[in-house]
Length: 111
Image (cartoon, rainbow, N blue to C red; front, side, top):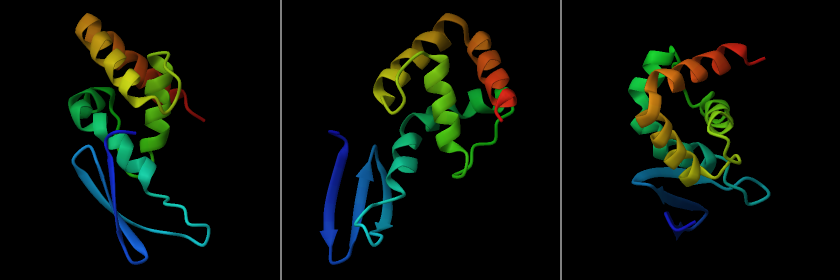
């Protein structure tokens, strides 16, 4: 991914993604668990009003679930955030209320 810059500092790394800094520590397997949440915020910051209209309070706990819902609404494979964001923008221009309605309905139907 082009937007990721990693700088080593002993046993930790500072990860810069889309202008957001996140300090993350390796677990026993050398994995970084907070990376995904940071990537999601890339386009989420542009949707604050949309989430408000849909009645969704975005938290670190539900970001991934919301992201999966959005990918589903725009018919883009999960984790392809650039393609999802392009399609979200297209749908918002075409019919914002319809997108908000789909988002609200999908959020309320989740198990």
